[in-house]
Amino acid sequence: MRVHVVSDVHGNSEALARSGEGADALVVLGDLIDFVDYHDHGGGIMGQVFGAEKVSVFARLRRERLHTDAAEYAKRLWSGLENAADVVEEAVREQYKRLFAAMTAPTYATPGNVDVPGLWAEFAGDGVRVLDGEVAEVGGLRFGFVGGALLPPGAGPRRGGVFRPYLRTAADFDAATAALGPVDVLCSHIPPDVPELTYDVLARRLEIGSAGLLRAIREHAPRWSVFGHVHQPLAARLRVGRTECANVGHFQRTGWPYVLRW
Image (tube, rainbow, N blue to C red; front, side, top):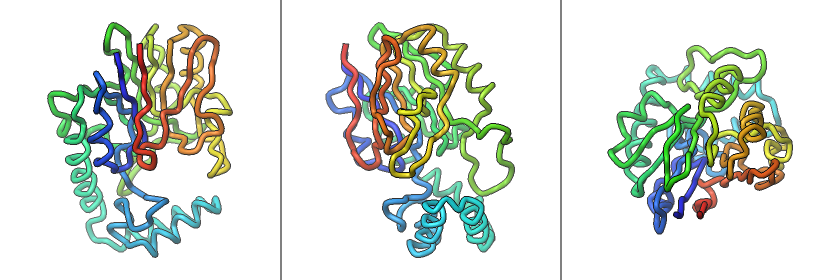
């Protein structure tokens, strides 16, 4: 068996259409939507709506870790539109139409934080299985899927706004992970809570990893744990016990899938 795995597609439908070539199956670990393109400020939904110059200001504030200023700046931009939520939903739907059409191999997909899971059933065709907190058998192995990312400790779900990221409490995420039981391949958008896997060397910060995923790895020792989310990790791969933990890469930029063979 040969399975290709991608994550953090962020709108790159052209590469996604090629990602299943030569594979028996394709696994997609979320973040399909290109909302803010930090490499091409004119790209992504914000770039299309407001232009590269305004997005560059937002990106600079984020880069300088002025998160409150960045949030206020974005809020001012969106409040200048009469129908901001409708604009965003239309753009998301347009991207999903292209992206799901690009999944040509038998596909198993789970959402990331930059996704709207409630829309996936509308666009997923017969060859795409959407899984979140569920197990699928692929080539005789059990693949377990858990989607989304974690809310910061003590934070609640965002209310209002033009776009709601798919963020979960640790209790909810951990319960979904535990319910998978023993699996051969643990598939998630975010990494387990291991510093080498959660530290982004370009952003110079730790992303939030999952203690629940780490517990599942230590308890069940799957062959692989595959994930994305951290675009420039300190370590792309390491072993936890017998489990190979692998960040499958920032697919928007690389265009190359990670390959599992058995």
